[in-house]
Image (cartoon, rainbow, N blue to C red; front, top):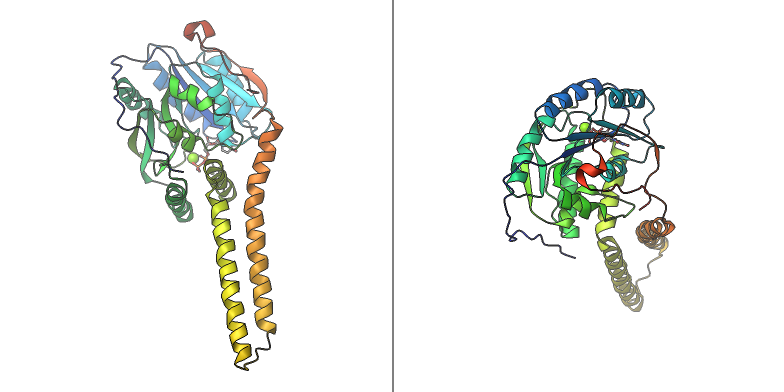
Length: 340
Ligand code: UDP
Ligand code: MG
């Protein structure tokens, strides 16, 4: 499957500022960064005369993240704090936040200040120029381990080759989206979500904004290797069934090898050369067992996802909401509930 992007569509500049702005910030055990995040957000909000809402989602944190967010929502009228009923994961937290936004433009950023809010005015300038999606692209990445950088490097290149969809390299979820792009994205209600891939899939006019990604302001990464690996598997399996095809190729290759081997054995037998066979029997049993289990595992990944999708459970559940910065009447937009 190859998905091409409509780069030739004619872009019409908007030449005006947005009527309202929403920010979506997922937070998981981020108590150390929240005070600094809040003061940086206050500076940003003060620059705009239009209504701005900041939707902070607590993804089931175990530290003081929720009490702090609830307090901020009471003290700052631009903050809306949402507590999910448990930890649903970063991509689902973003989805929950997007469902709650009402702004004409929406910006997704991480809580740890690795996605500097100071870049938002530049993103808005690109939006004025007619772009629907403006994504931050990392020129340099500070404070990330060599293994994480290598994993990201290998993943994006593999994804591009296997899926045929270009997810811009060296990007995260830091991006500005026009309302129509947000609505398009939110109409995709799949369970295993790879948001940056889905944003690429929707198309429209997209532009990169290069930036040097600073280190996390405080605390440690909430994306250990295990979570990054699961995200990579979700990304591949939700965009392509190429691994199943690879599994078939593997099966065909193994069968071809077995066929050739049988011919060799018969020829050796005719020539009177007797192979005692114990080692080769063990080797072939192990090889075939390994191949079969691998293929079964790949199949299982897809069957499991069909099962979960078939259950039609809500993507997430909300425990509490504090604050209501943008009223529905202001934008004429209704929020989506968690179950749609
Ligand atoms: N996050 C989340 N739920 C999770 C893990 C992470 O909401 O289960 C949030 C986290 O608080 C942060 C963002 O996702 O705002 C990115 O996480 P992090 O900065 O730890 O990832 P990294 O930048 O190290 O890849
Ligand atoms: Mg980070």
